[in-house]
Amino acid sequence: MTGTGFGPTAQSFSSSGRNSLWLGMPAATQEICAHDSVLWPARAADGALKLVGNALNGYYFDNLAGVADREELEHIVLAVAFVRDLGPIADLARKRGVPLTLYALADGEGGFPSLEILRLFVTGSSSSWQLFLTRRFYHPKVAWFRGVGCYIGSANLTDGGRMSNLECGVWLEEEELRRENWDQELAAMLAVVRERSAAAIREDIDRFERLQRARAPSSSGKRSRTSRISWRRNCSTFLAPIART
Image (cartoon, rainbow, N blue to C red; front, side, top):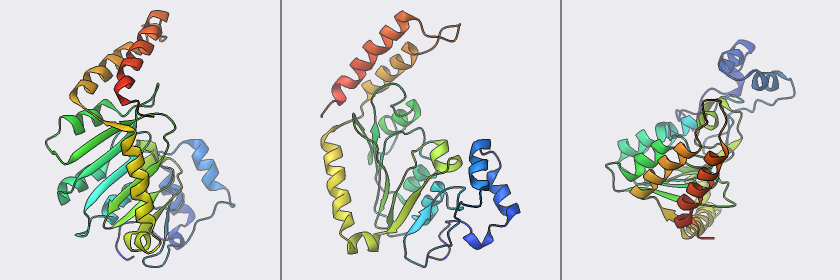
């Protein structure tokens, strides 16, 4: 697929080119990339499956917004466990005026979408943007740009998942999804997730703010026993309306 914004082909990865991609990456990640055993696959033929590995092969998760920026785009559906920010996906939804639906994990310490994400969906101006919170045994990383194609892989909606981590995912064109009937399977999976989820509401923002205060460390850098008890109590309160399993 020509001019889709996936990045350079594998043939363009000279030593200097690879080094430029590593800027800002953790030292351990750079060490992994430096080994000769790491494969740098060539770009797939037009319309074929494409690997998305961030710095590993130059195809970044954030490039997907450019790939999906087409008239055929109907709806953006994200089923991702850990969500901190949407990156350019939010801008794409605004630009194309399409609905945006996010299914995110809300379960336990660290397993919540960011407060900014909650506010974006709950108090945002677009009524076609929906956030659903789900619990337990939830770990997908799916970004379906309906009408265009779908990413299925390992990247969460975090800075690391979108740009700096080594990730491994695939991009499938909508035509291929339909040919293999995978669009129906994806729709069925999302229906199950929706059934076990609850739509985010304004009260969730207040509950989440209380959670943040409850888990804030003391001046010593550690949470007190009272703080830990408060965290668990508030966590149970926050999660109660979300439990559908």
